[in-house]
Amino acid sequence: MESALGRVRALRVAASRVSLTPLLVRAGVFLTVLVGFLVAFPAEALTGRNLGLLVLAASLPAIGPRRVWPTFAALVAVAGWLLAADGYGRPFALWRLLALAALLYLAHTLCALAALLPYDAVVDPALITRWLLRAGAVVLAAAVLGVLLMGVGGLGGTAGHQLVTVAGLLVAVGVAALLGWLLRRR
Image 1 (cartoon, rainbow, N blue to C red):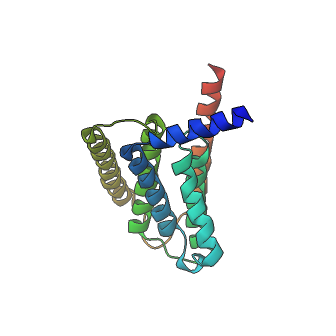
Image 2 (cartoon, rainbow, N blue to C red; image 1 turned 135 degrees about the horizontal axis):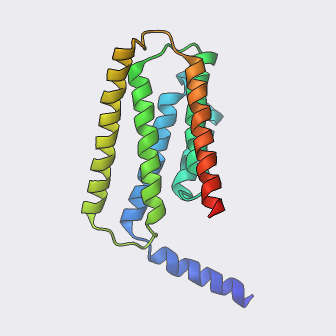
Image 3 (cartoon, one colour; image 1 turned 45 degrees about the horizontal axis):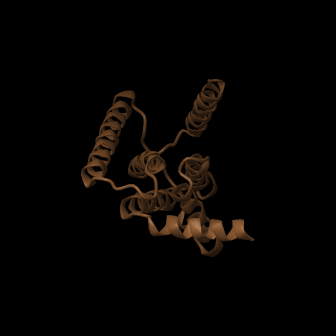
């Protein structure tokens, strides 16, 4: 009984030490993932229980950014993109693809920042500003380069390339598995 009371006291002390900046970063993770889901999934699928499940899935990376949840959220967004393209026949839109890629990257980088910040961290706002500016520069450069490469390669238009999408997803999963294996090997 004494150990349970000790845990409750420790939890109360920890909750009283929580600072605002780590909570705001985790709220940014939640909002970024949720907006990514809204961009990826078709509007017809965003009803009732499905929307509640997506809100739950968006909260998981914010709660556990060091765990598997950011990868899970990214895979849910990709599944929503594929569902919209195949199941609902939504036409390919470059702006939607760029927005989803940007939101997935921002969610990833915010999860990395949230994983580094303890709940009671006192953080200079300049650190968060520099982190977000760097992420914005990466998103902008990737979007411009992607549009230019699509224009040079003659890709795009109204026809999507499902085989390329699935191949890219498999490559991403393979790279993640390889990195995980290399980290465990050390």
